[in-house]
Amino acid sequence: MRTQVHEIAAGIYRLSTFVPGIEAPAGFTFNQFLVLGDEPLLFHTGPRRMFPLVRDAVARVMAPGRLRWISFGHVEADECGSMNEWLALAPHAQVAHGQTACSVQLDDLADRAPRLLADGEVIDLGGGKRLRYLDTPHTPHAWDAAVLYEESTGTLLCGDLFTQLGNGPALVTGDIVGPAIAAEELFRYSSLNPAMGTTIRGLADLAPRTLALMHGPAYEGDGASALRALADDYDRRAGRPG
Image (tube, rainbow, N blue to C red; front, side, top):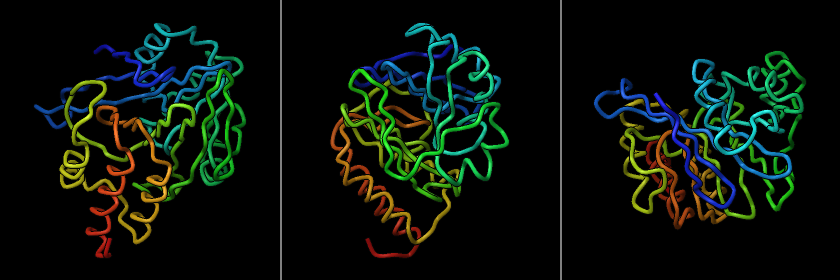
């Protein structure tokens, strides 16, 4: 396997590893996102066994030891399995996440104390990059779920939202909602709850121009419409009107 590197928005790089054996023949991608700045941030680390691949991909963009921040959608192996390997490699790096993840998991799991982020708090990376932390509990799953929004490029780092199969282009402008609905039908990975649609519509209010998917291509276009369509589908599944 080799991790591919593509710039999907100014100073934001998608690091993508395709694993053909998952739901073959379609396969499945595991994506991380490197946001450059004076204090670079990695969103998702990948699992521990992928650490050498992700480290070498980061090295094609910058010196890995310069990494300052590590964040992710929620505490799960593919989101943060190699966070301690990154903390060992980058001496000034620190994990950053919300109250639930820090108090329930990260205060114990991370080899250095994490930075606790309040809902809506911004990490200023310098160089014009500002990442806003947003709690999305149980959306699409996990009590500690969250996303990051990069304000200068209008990029929403979506975590597991819009998960889909396959290994398409790094950046697309077509439909990402249909493939996400198909993946939900297959995996049943979301924690369906009455608040899901409302939570996702709150993200739509950001009007993101780029959606950075953890499992699937990045999307460029009307992110608000895509998010609202996804919210409608979850409302349908939860038995709520849109």
